[in-house]
Length: 256
Length: 200
Image (cartoon, rainbow over the protein chains, first blue to last red):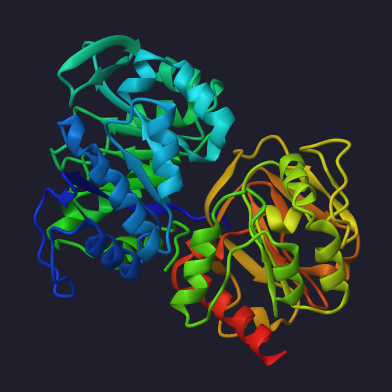
C-alpha cells in the first residue's frame, strides 16, 4: 500500500542549519548533514533543505551540501530556495539531490518547469507554492500565490497555478499556507484539500504543524500525500517515530 | 554499469556503506570480468537502450547473464530486462525476461512517487532479513508485466492497481524501487546482493 510521508524541513543559510537543535546523537547541530542523518535514523521518509542564503556568492555552499548529503543519506532529499535556472537545477541534481523545488523562478518564467521536466523528468521537479487566503469571510475561498515569505503578492490564484504547473510537468506540489506558517495552529485544510483535488500529482502539506494530531488531521481530511514540518521536530518536541506512531494510530499507512 | 543514465554514485556508496566495493564503469571488458553486475538507471527506456548500445554493452551483458553471473537491475534497470516498453515504441529491450513494460493505468497518480510496500511472493536471498511488506522508495511511471508468473518476486499495490515490483529468474534479480533511497532495509538488499556475489 502506498504510504504517507513525513518530511522534516531544514532551513539552511551559508551551509548551516538556521534553527538550533540539541539532539543527543549529534555533535554539530548546525551541520545539515548530521541533522539529516539523524532524521534518516529516526525514520524520516524524505528531507527538504531550504536554502535561504541571500548572497549569490554563497550559493555554491548549497551544491556542496547536496554533494555531502548524497554521500551520507539513504533517503531522498529535495533542495529548494534560490534556484533560478535550468543550470542551477542541473548542478544540484548532478551533486546528488533527488529533486529540486522551484518557486519564484517558476513564477517569473513558467517555461522553466517545462524545460526542467523535459530535461530531467517530472519526478525531480517540485513546485513550491506559498499561498495566502485573500477572500473575505463568507466569500467563496480564494488563495493567492505570494513571494518572499508572504510579502509580495503575485496576483496569481494558487489553485490555478498548481494546475498550470502540473500541466507544465511539475511532479509534486509543496504547498505552504502563509496564513498558518509559524502559527502552530495546524495546516490549512481547505487550501490543501482544494489543491489535492485540483491536481493528479502528490501534494505535500506545509505550514502550521504544532502537534502530532495536526499531521494526521491534514492527511485524513485532505488526502495529502505527505506532511512537512520543521520546528516540531527540530526542537526535540517530538520524534519522527512518535509522529508516525500517532499517524498509524489514526489509521494512516506509514513506514514504521 | 554506467550507460549515461544517472544515480550511479548513490548505488555505489550504498555498497560501500555495507562494506563491499563497487566499481562504476562503461568498459565492456570490465563488465566481462565483474563478479556481479548492477544495472541502475533513471530516465527513458529508449535513450537507455541507446546508451547501452553505443557503449557496446548489450552483447557483453547478455553473455554474462547467460553465463550465470549475479545480476541486479534497479528501476529502469528492471524495465530494460524485458522485451519492449510503451514508453519507447519500436525500441527492443534486452529481452532477458519475457514480457513488456506498460504505463501505470490512468486514475493513479503518475509518477508513482514515495514509499510503498513490497509483498514478497517468491523466496529469495535478496530479501534475507527483510520482513515481508517492508516499505521501499519508488519513483516511476511505467511498470513491468512479466509473461511468466514464476519470474515474479514482489508485488506492490498502488491505488486501484497491483504491479510487479520485483522479478527473479535464476541469477537475474531486479526491483522497481530504489534500495539506495530506502534507508536501512534498502541497504540490506544491497548487502544481500553483495553476499550473493561474494558467495558465488
